[in-house]
Image (cartoon, rainbow, N blue to C red):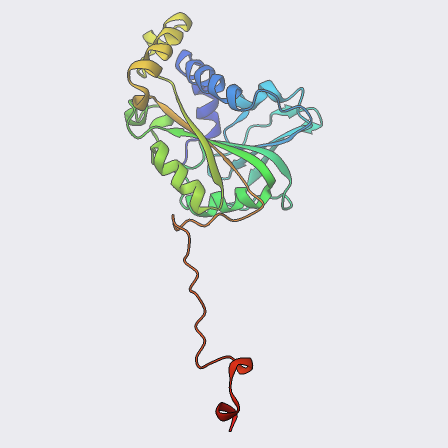
Length: 247
């Protein structure tokens, strides 16, 4: 069963939720510093991370899975939230320039189908960022918190899942190095531990982020160039035959 939208909203109002948002958004802003004029989709519970882009983007749409429920967030053109049935997204092909998926894959029954649907609605050369709880981190073990729900991922697993769906992963990153303890979620302490974690134990973050692109072409995934055999011709060429050969 998925984490509900109301529980996620409550989590992001706490000091731990704000710390998680700030540290992941810090990494996201380095990947997407400006989304002016872009059509942006948030899949899962993405509003805390996409809110900062709402004023400059052309439009921000929030798609939330039916098991999660939906909260009506206002946008420039009215309510920006839509409740999705299963993995089906109610959008045309190639509708979005950028997609952010968070609180999405970990609890998806069929992550392959989910990524395939996100691939469908992303335009060619568009970019997707997936944020998930880190398999090696402490937050994935905190079952009382939203990032402890579902299946966590390593950065390599996340890249592999995106590759299978047809995306081309470009860059990976880590965020959220404080332990999931409320008393440690003070802004100065969070910032200091983030810098320390990035230097000393980069693989043990709470979250992993991977960006990928929907390329116009398909890259072979066999890892080596295929050999082209030299053609073999039997007999001698017609022009080189003697009269005797033609008799």
